[in-house]
Image 1 (cartoon, one colour):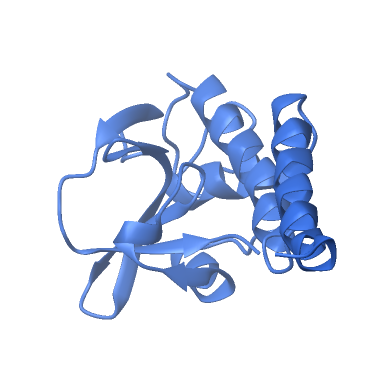
Image 2 (cartoon, one colour):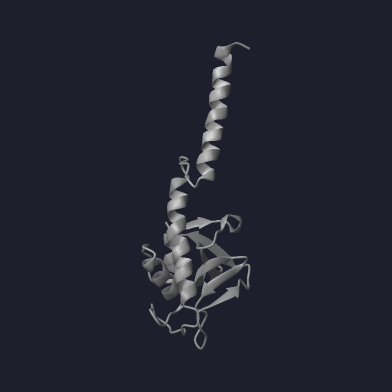
Length: 157
């Protein structure tokens, strides 16, 4: 192998080493197509934290916070505080999100409960099969295991 033939190989190794060094010291590597996912993750994480901070807040039909919530009121409030705008109802929120599969879900995604095509409840996915939500009258905002397979997932754009 001549010196000229080794140059691309050496450059490739140097590029890999530089990328690894950058990652090790806390830098970031921009990959086309991933920037929008990363940008979406920050508000979703913040919205999840905001919803969790409302633990124990009473359910009230039609309430959008800051001290009482219905299900979509909690998601609307949490994402608004995180810098993202959502419509008012669970069904409207479903129609405004990017629909994703269960295998693609991440903490901060919305979980929509449905009966047929009717969306009747929404919560924020917390990971490990659980959501933060405001369940029903007489209950409070809490972390709960997803209790049915009749759910769809949406990512706030």
